View 1 (cartoon, rainbow, N blue to C red):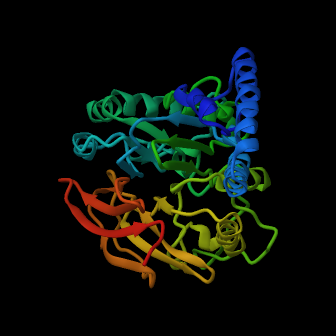
View 2: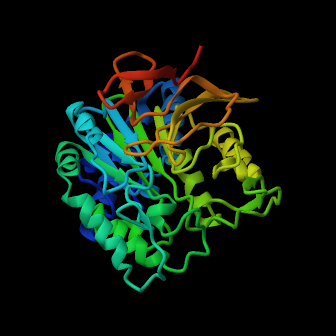
Length: 398
């Protein structure tokens, strides 16, 4: 397993690492042995206080097992602009993708519903699914053929997770029987490398780690569909499931997430297709699984993960919610859910910061890595690229 322990080994991350060939593993092991011997000689001659500091540093590296990360990048310059959005129907024009491309973000994150596979040019699909899901293939072909999408794809790196409409069925969870077919089509469309762990484990959750000079950025995208238990409804609205055993992410994804959050990162983005930080409103969100939501907050505290920024989609409007939890720094959930879609109204949210954006929009995180304390500006931007809402965030909020 690949571990970041010495500056010599760090140089190996100039590759986009999904898994290391056996010859490279051997080279890395030999480098560790040589580097370790040299370090021991130096420590034998060093001041005891220096040795203690070095021991603490090595202990930190030991906990930082980058082998659990799906995609690792050693970069000279960390991403400065990360854009994101969700909810786009392929039969509609998508000029907002041109707006995003013009900003030249380092990364764009699709947070789900990049297609509406359960529709055909705006009409609800009424038939039964067939193996191979030809209707999914057709919708992705429509998206891929759009000049706006091609412009975005050629201008930045695309990262994606899914929500219900590109997973398979409105509001679906683990009961959807064609999830493996839809996963294959999804990963193929977004050109997931064939050696990526996403191909061999259930679900589409994944992680990215950017190691730059002095700082690091982690991007985690969750899968809130493949493992999710059934929703509970009352009078046409979803209500919280108070069963502590009910799951949203599933046990394997939770274990994986804990390992991700143990890794040292100055800033980390957690992408969820459904809202995390808002007030319960009867729609799909983490509030339908309150024990799972609390588990997430407890896990952030347990691992000491700093710099967490949630981003989410699904609801067809944009808003920023502030999350305040005892024993944890305040952080935010930026919901961007309107690449082509809007909604007739919006729900109350006592955690909302600023105004709701009901027109088409996208989200943007702008990082400042130049200060001693990394900072970020979290924004919702409109079709023209103008900021309509925003907050500032740092790893050590005042």
